[in-house]
Length: 229
Image 1 (cartoon, rainbow, N blue to C red):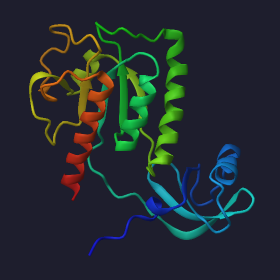
Image 2 (image 1 turned 135 degrees about the horizontal axis):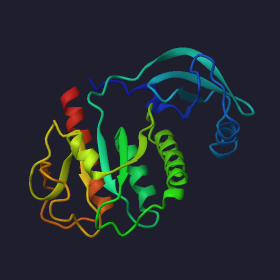
Image 3 (image 1 turned 45 degrees about the vertical axis):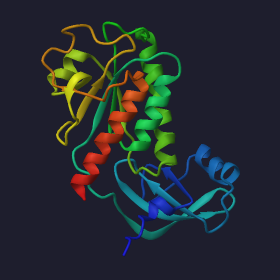
Image 4 (image 1 turned 60 degrees about the vertical axis):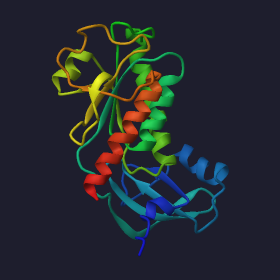
């Protein structure tokens, strides 16, 4: 018999709140539920605090919610998964964050590589991270995630020292123990840039950085799910 889907997956909406025991909607969330999604009284809304605790609520007109007794914690997924990607041009960082969030990655790390075309000025880093965090939050709601991935900036040397594997030609197949994988810039890696980090091969094609990050994330999350199952 097929198992019943988790309640937050079938709810009419999911929103993040500070406290699932006494949930209060922000003004933007209240507007979104009532005016954009056009929820009706009694429709189900799942609230979560972003760290795995959830509670089912009922929508109350015009823009409120009422908590129910149905609550709990998200199931344990296993080892947190991280993807690092060299900063890409234009609105591609937004696409990367959106899709990796939907897939289930827990940590998304941007870095400057030696051949990076796009670079974030120091005075723009905080603003860029704030924007990407908003996108991650929105994507978490859309994909019914109970947690929001962290969005960070780092450097290749530090990430390699943390045990990162690197996506590049000539590597091995992605394995269950690869929980941090780096995607290089549009111009490719410079020789010796990632030291002795193990290599992960993504196939015979040359992929755009954003495509490679999505391919890696999908495989990492699938492997984690198979281990949990």
